[in-house]
Length: 397
Image (cartoon, rainbow, N blue to C red; front, top):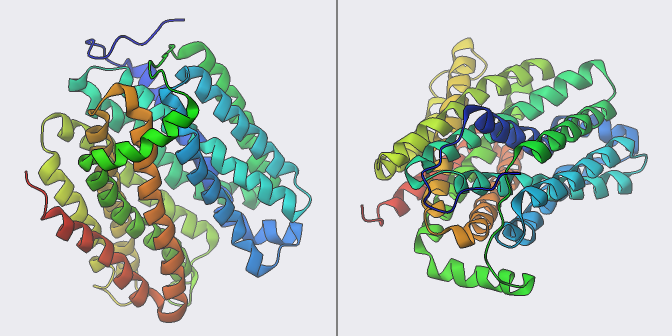
């Protein structure tokens, strides 16, 4: 098995390896989102009350957050290829458990571990950064992140389409089969990468607090992305409710097509990586924030329920995803330049902070939509990129 070249070596990533890492990220992260459009049939089958149905999503998010804090940093401690396989294996068992579940407790336990197992993607992303020289790092991270964003955006429509023809259990069984095949390919194709941290697990975790305090670029980039991901979560939590409501009256299949169109925003990832490599991060960051704000504004141009309103909402989805993805890649590229020896810890902190913004946006956005409709939710959503832009004014070029 080959090894990753030493830091700074003039290595570039081959097209097959780039495709493998991007596909791995997309196929693994999709497991976080398969259950979201299936909450209704899952709850009906297992006997979950409407009040408890939200736990299906919440526990998956909690598991992912725990994995970011306590598992992703292990990329600075253990051989990375083996760590990716172990985490993905845990996620595969959890996905099988979800498909086999007969009681609410069984499914909710599986949902928690699906979240934990999905953090393998956040070991893969810094792993890809280790594989290339600094001048290619932004492009590489962008290419790999495009797979992750496509996985996020396609997971919901994919599970909806499958559940239209097969029992919802099959969504999880099919995913498990894909993950097993993916692990076989990863085991053969990925090189070794043995970190040189020389720390115990306790020392590794305690060092994260010091890294956060001592790394202003991490704090800034994480807060930028936390605010934009909050806007992302507001949009994608509430627009399905808007589209299925009396104004538009779309079916689940039509809403799935809307989400599919939004996935076009993932094309921003490789573009953002190349902009960062050329030194354009400062202005690209502000353009990304502005695009997210404009996306919310344009949804109010036409009367709700009209064909023009639906078209503008679709364009807004693409523009919003483009901005959020751009800022994500710019941020990761910035923190990956700080040092190979703590790259996984920095990524774990970065992802945990911005993921918390998404959780806040999703929870409050749904609450505001229930009380004030799209007007209230979109006003809250646009506050996130505006706050990000105001904070960006404090950054010197």
